[in-house]
Length: 221
Image 1 (cartoon, rainbow, N blue to C red):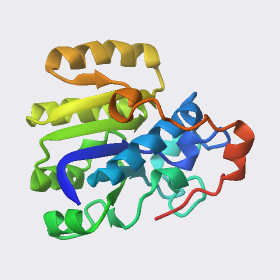
Image 2 (cartoon, rainbow, N blue to C red):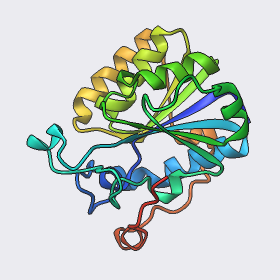
Image 3 (cartoon, rainbow, N blue to C red):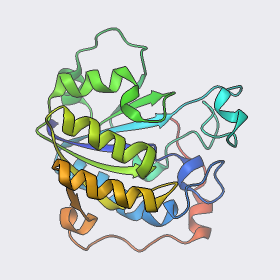
Image 4 (spheres, rainbow, N blue to C red):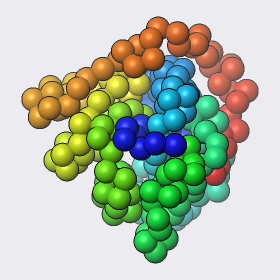
């Protein structure tokens, strides 16, 4: 596994991605075939996938103003199965003491980081992983665009990484705001691409709501 290029998969969990999820992001189910294609492409190219997972206790303060979602151990907390590749390494933010990230990255196809913070890089551990691996380019997708993808792109650009944002493989709480942010990202040097730009047009047929429901049991790492 090489990590000159890393694919950053943000919060593609059942509660956010599937229509019956606890905090469904409107339109997220429709981009699952693209996300599946991107992750499979990364795996085929032996590029590392780093995935984040919102992870909350049942009594989290976030639920004072938001529906309950991504409670650790619940079905909706788990990643949607098509967003997983094996072997993966599961790590709790702030839980490991200075692991050897280059060795872990070479031995695993995917690193999964559980986090409490919504913007991914407010989780100190994620920044430490990227600093240790020092990828030349990072390709980003997932949910939400406005609170996950775009803040991650801004952070990585500021750290000197080349960044690709896959704008047809992300959905946001406010896509109007996300569109404005994308313009700013381009000005800052990000490359905005489509899934087809990366893997071609061979993306499998979009799943129906019924087929998604039949796969509702998301996998917890």
